[in-house]
Image 1: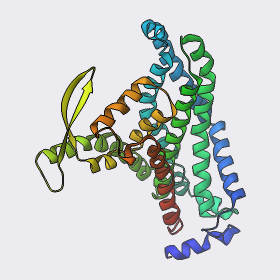
Image 2 (image 1 turned 180 degrees about the vertical axis):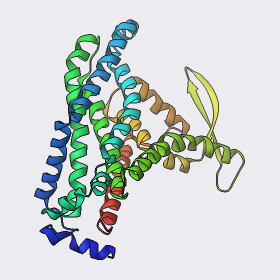
Image 3 (image 1 turned 120 degrees about the vertical axis):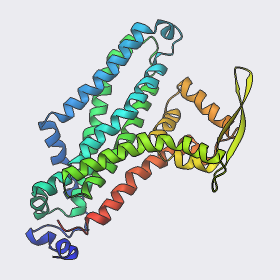
Image 4 (image 1 turned 90 degrees about the vertical axis):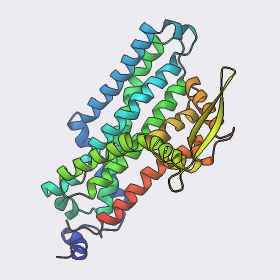
Length: 323
């Protein structure tokens, strides 16, 4: 049977046409997905994990960082430390959450039962994305909310704005990786293939992508193809230093990494000195004014790109595969 025939027969059991979007149907799929997570304690497990993460980092700061507390910069350090941990942990959780979202249903055959109900393929895919995103987003929110009391009590200086900014940026970052995970899951027939795809994505962004700047630098130093290097002067504590970096255009590619966009977004939503100082260093790298693609506001567009594009590709492809 051709893929077109398989797509057309999705509604044989009373389902909707595969390309139709029914908001009530999407909500029903998302609700069931979320309820399954609550029943399995996944939601509460993640909430406890984020709560414990914040409490442990806060406890370490309050115990070892008396000098930091005296300077009233404890929330700054909390945001700085926690953001570096969540930058690694949130993608892992999102990828695991999305791993079996569609591939598991296809492998077990339950996707056919789901599609025999009044759900189109589009409804199922969007519902899965919303359901898994809700699990991650609400668990982050609950964990942060429960920890807020402990954080405020232990830290000498507590900024609600910075704390909420970290939470909001972590949620957007997590939804971006959830979209990638659900999209990849819909493009694979088995959980084994889906798991390999998730591992490949993690290696891409945390192995390959993190090495690109060094690669671009080496290519520029050797004048290979259209790569070159730029020499700039940076001032640190009143002293000037000459540095070399890759060409401007390479930073557009480097900044497409969701993790890099997450860091830059934190600069916009929080008032952390260390992040602002890094932003000033970046400005000096580009002669005092950052290109638009390195400015803080653009980081949100990048994360929106990673939310919208993977699921758009998945919607197009999943609508045409033979289940």
